[in-house]
Image: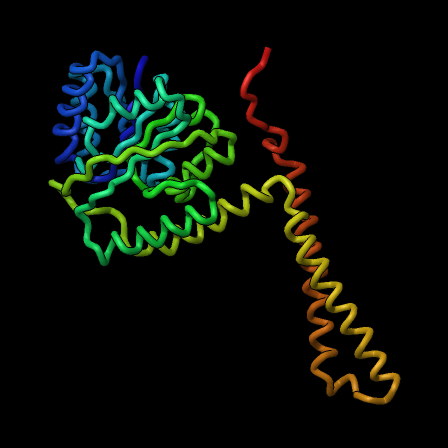
Length: 310
């Protein structure tokens, strides 16, 4: 199968038929074998009935329905597990992503050898205050911290080599950082393509302003996991050692001054600060040890990506 198109959706019943007709037309024009996996993330508006009708009319359309709303990351991860195509495309169901972009995205994977190609909505039709400006700040921060030079990490229109989606796990709200997760897993050839962004025709956006705060918190999490996920003691131990050393030196100086009669321990702020640093250092060491125990007993502790095997 040439393509698997993953469509996560929540309350998009009005747009699904239009999207399906558009996808079918593009696939026929380019002679591509395909499947469309629509993941219903707990919709309440009849989206699942539309998916059932699409499947009955065309077996290339498959549906997965969640019991409740789990979020886009869960929908994408489930879709990745179900995908059977050599190239996997993700797109939103709101018609703001154009299926006309799919053949070129696939070509960049197949012919140009990219592991992942991310769309870049260079011209957007969203509110500048609500989305455009925060998105630019968010993308600039992610570029700086990850070293991946993409303009639009959060674009829903992406193309993947099959190996990529079968080797990564997307959870929480990490769908914004799939390129970072892919790079962490060893897929370093990541490209970008300018894609068309269309105005929403039906419904309303399902994301609020809190996604930007959550996005930065998730970025901190993914960067920590990528660097110290297998060796947490390297992070906690380094900070704990520094804190303990500072506390120990300060305590020795305070005790020396006390012996010389210069200060009274109970009246010296430096005594309490030295004790604070000693306790903090000890606690950070313990956190590192607990992290190592968790890591050593994790079933994925020795899972590494193998590129080739003879």
